[in-house]
Length: 240
Image 1 (spheres, helix red, strand yellow):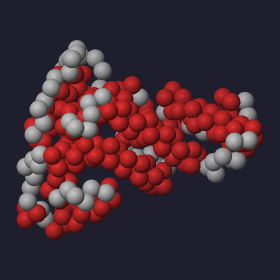
Image 2 (spheres, rainbow, N blue to C red):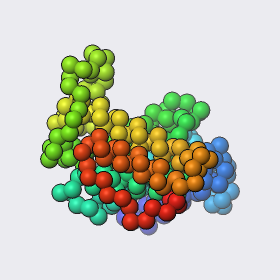
Image 3 (cartoon, helix red, strand yellow):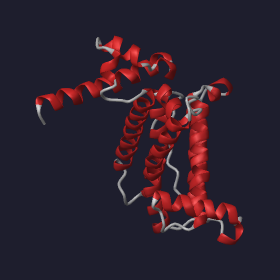
Image 4 (spheres, rainbow, N blue to C red):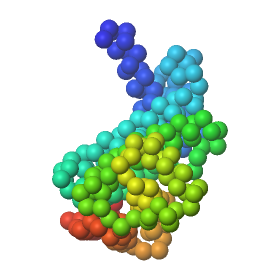
């Protein structure tokens, strides 16, 4: 890499890092070229050499965040080993919550209410969600191959739902899973996502002081659905 290329890459990294700081400090509305330029002591037109508009920068930032999240999930799974996919899913659920609580503004950008600017940014972020689905889906598929769990039969699914499950199964590449298993995957994710949202936005803590115990009940419920032997965390104190 030439010196010019290295400097360009460094500034691009600084642009996205500054965008993230502004997001965390003041929300997505604060992520503006003028604000970023002021932080980096450059002119706003210089940013257009990297991003055609704000939407492109937000999409790049979201991509970075999904990459960070997924890499963390993979690292958590690696502490268990591929021979225990059920326990991988369990530690990944906990790691997903931990990342989300450490990065509440970033969670809101990726998995909160779609941005009002338009469908382009939200659509791009939704495409990145596929990485997240695959991160959980790999041990899920491995678990199914090792020890199939109870899933709805094809005859129990409406034609419309079966078609949607077929499409999603093809998109994420889990063609070895029956449609019923893909539906169970969705149901597990709805529990993980729902419980994490309630936690991130403070709705759990409004009702119960021991948030970890409530989240662990959700984890145990997912384990029961998948026939996984639930193992409680080493520390169940009520923090993240």
